Image (tube, rainbow, N blue to C red; front, side):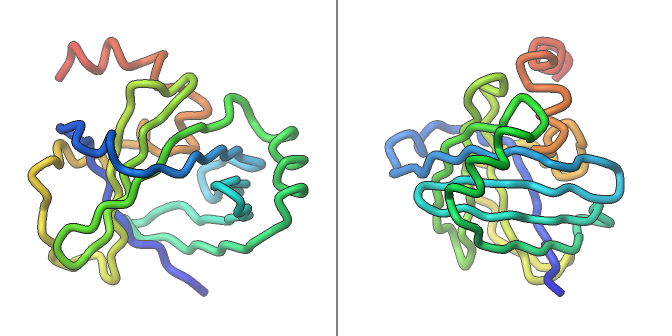
Length: 160
């Protein structure tokens, strides 16, 4: 069994735009309160991922490589819209940060995630990190399918 422990933050700088990126397309076969089942194409790799609901930023995660052709077929039956993004990886301190620039119906959203080995692990905070949105369900990729950023970003921007 594998555990995922991650934190998610808004990004306040655009230095990442010049870094190499991998295009990702992912869709959800199942989205409910207890679990998600995701299909992801990332470059020439494809995965099927099953995640439990997070409890204190920790959840069970099972990820399996699948043939690209299978992923393409599965994406056709996923909830819409699909999540499209460009991912860049930035090393800062002892950790790799994944910066996701969302596209499509989530255009304008940029978040950085860090995977940890323990929920209380201490880490260096890069200067380009903004608000912690880990516990804000709007920023979960599976919720961006149900309520894309373009639907709420204007209200969110004026309320902050």
